[in-house]
Length: 319
Image 1 (cartoon, rainbow, N blue to C red):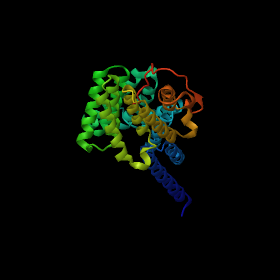
Image 2: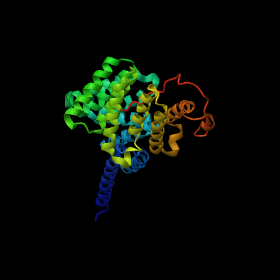
Image 3: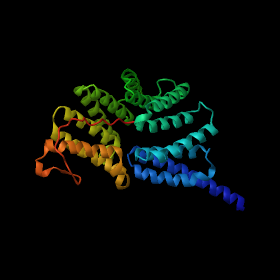
Image 4: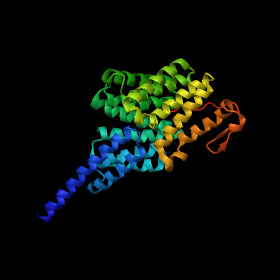
């Protein structure tokens, strides 16, 4: 075979391998295996990077690496990948292309994690929704992903009526398309439960959250559910209902299960400093005096200072 043909064949093989690794990482991410997904995406990027920053799968891999890094609490590193992915998408596609919309969505997720950037998140989600609505129409499930994120952003800004509208519409779209078993529906129900928690509607909150918990169990199976970050979030939120009802021992058990899920997801490198884990440890510290005798009040190597639950733990939304 001629050398130039060998080179082309080698490049084509590398591109196929990169695409396959990208799709494998998507499965790992959906199962909550963030560290495994990160390793797979790094390998995919090495295969695809020679094709340039505007190659469709280079753009996709950059966004996926950014999502994993964001979930691991590495915001600055995630922002770099999101911005480079957006730049590549804007160079390759028209301004109203769906890939540009998902680039904006990812930046919105980044801003959503930054307490002072709620307005920026809302702007990104709105722009992305406008683009996707032109392509898919308002009832498509792809739109529902953005509606969920938009609802979370509205809640962050205390625009509760708009938040409830977006989450309700997203729920309707998933109900109509997939029924009651899709994991993204579980995320929406979890966020509706958080809305009910905000309003101290404990019965409604528990109904939404237990429904979300059941969906995650069915979707991820017994092997993956216990170590999935979505399950960790919903357990944490159910624990808040138990706290409100003064079922402190049950709340502690749920928080410990939630903490185990998050630590399994984020691993030893990221877990101890991850914002969700830090928040969970704080919640457990507050619970210590309420559920254990004084001589047993040691949590994760730190002594618990007895105090009332005067600062309510914060619910975990799922985007």
